[in-house]
Image 1 (cartoon, rainbow, N blue to C red):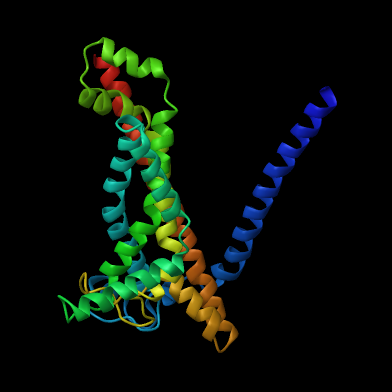
Image 2: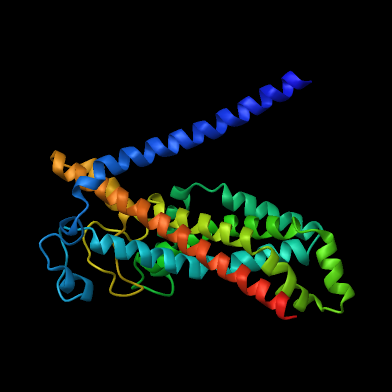
Length: 295
């Protein structure tokens, strides 16, 4: 039996090493190609940086509009997806246990398995339907892209929230009820704070998926040159589409290197999102510990 355990242990270490090596190779490849062109010219082109940041002058040769567009897209997507996804996960784990929960779980699984290109086609057809019925001026925009991406990433939020709550010990809920907590107080003061780590992990996964997806936004409003989004119904630029367009249409080596620079910026944005979520998570945990100490 000991040799079987050693084999399993060896396979586990091999799997971990494989993941770490692959991640290091990916980051090393992107950084080695993108770092030489990571400068102000990559972001702003020939436009003065201050004027570009303040929106006083357009940027046509840099990735600044794509960076801002990506951040706006992720923010709008999470505004659409976070509250419904978390609330649905709470409902499935705390309030519904019968056949209705099975049907809703099946719907989430089907939504999670939907290819992103199909979700993009759904958004495109939705605009055509609105044009023919109630809103003739309807057009693809950052709002439509965020809505379609929210549908795409919502299952991750539902699953993460549900799994985090269901993994809590039963004694935690029983203790709260024995102390006279109502179901609302139990959720607010015990269940949700205790499951916060898993919920925030789901938010990180959803935000990362929204930041990197290309198929959905290609059909719902992204363009290669539009400047910073002027409103919710405007076209927009995004880093994933910029990278895709550069890889498909580059004319010289320097332009390809700028594509690697855009990829590096996208990785940095992902790291910043993860770091911000981690800081928020630690803040919540400190707040919870402080409340417990005070009580």
